[in-house]
Structures are given as C-alpha cells and as structure tokens.
Length: 156
Image (cartoon, rainbow, N blue to C red; front, side, top):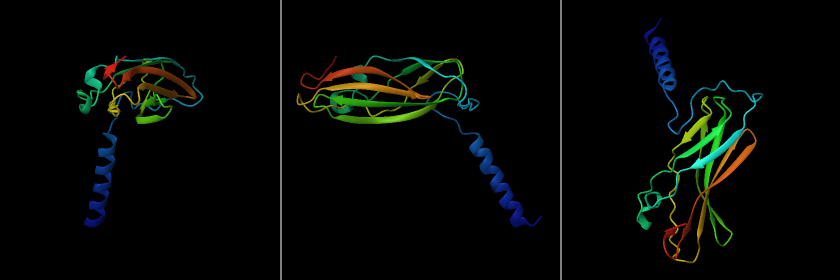
C-alpha cells in the first residue's frame, strides 16, 4: 500500500476513534436505543430554588447554573429539550437559551446547563417570571424557577 494512501487511512481511523470518545456533558446518557414507537412520558420536572448565587454578576450573583431533575418513563436515549424563558411583566419574553439531552434509562435525568443567568436590571420598570419548559416525545412540562422583583432586587 502506498505511503500516501496508508497515511490517509490512518488519519480517517484516528478521526473515527476521536469522535467515538465524545460524550454529552449536559446530562442524560449517550444510549440511543430508544425508538419513537416506545412509550415515553414525563412524570414531573423539578428545579432547585433560585438563589442570589444564580443571578448575574450585575445583580450580585455568580451566574450559578440551576439543577433541573426530570422524572420520566425509564427509557434511555429519548431526546429531551429544556429551555429557560423570562416572562416579563409587560407581556414580552426573553430566551435564556436551551439545551438538548438524552433521557437516562433510570427514569431520572438531571440537567445542569449554563443557561443565561437571571439579569433583570430594569430597576422596577419590569418584573421577571423565570420558567423552564421541558419537551419530549410530544409532551411539554413547564416549571417555574422563580420570580424576580427588579425594584427591590429580590427573588420571590
């Protein structure tokens, strides 16, 4: 086998090996054995309480990521999409990012993702209501994380 062809084959094998070693760091498992015909249901979604540490630096926080625990059918590999939205008191919304994870076969999937931290600096003009939306297999579950009063800079 010519050296040029041997080098190309080696590089291809190295790239495949490197990709095989990749895994998700946002929660869930890499098992993709689930199919769309398997029943899957979200039982509940719970989020850690919002604290000052979760707020952005402008509000005296550290931008600490929340922990969201999703209980569901014990099926691995079902895609779950989680988004954080700020519902402002004037009726508008602000997207704080979303992530996609795969369900864990245990029936509990934990998400600890770096969503944009709460950072309402409107000084009383608008208040915030932060909610997570969890979507999987055609189901949607919404859970309130916390409310923020921008006039007093307090979490409710």
